[in-house]
Length: 138
Image 1 (cartoon, rainbow, N blue to C red):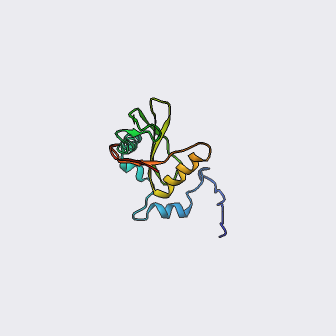
Image 2 (cartoon, helix red, strand yellow):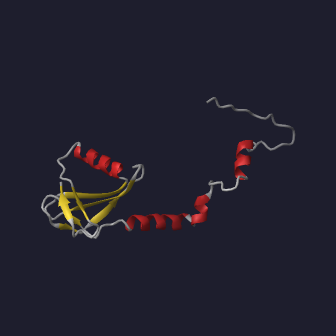
Image 3 (tube, helix red, strand yellow):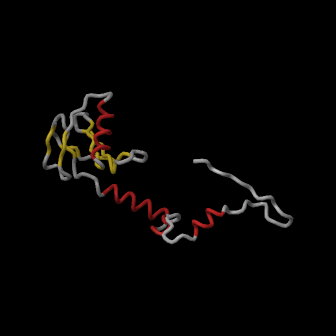
């Protein structure tokens, strides 16, 4: 679809600041306009705290190592920005040095995450309940 651009010549006495495009002025007045909704959810600090709380709510109580079956309790979040469909990723290391990941989100995205991990390393897949009491390996 072609896009048109235009400019308005400046008249004597007018500001040199660009005039607001008509489409933006029209969008500002639409009911239900979504632009600027972040401010309605609080300050930046409040929104950051809400995001951290949302991620923290997905933290498993413990992970069970798929290799040695011991509990992994020292668990850390992994930044998932840019990983579409991934809600949260947690990583921990057992006492024998094996790294264990937990991921939650859309099933296809979680599968793609673990597939990407398995490309360059030997990976044992498993699943567990949030409390870590129910654990199975593939």
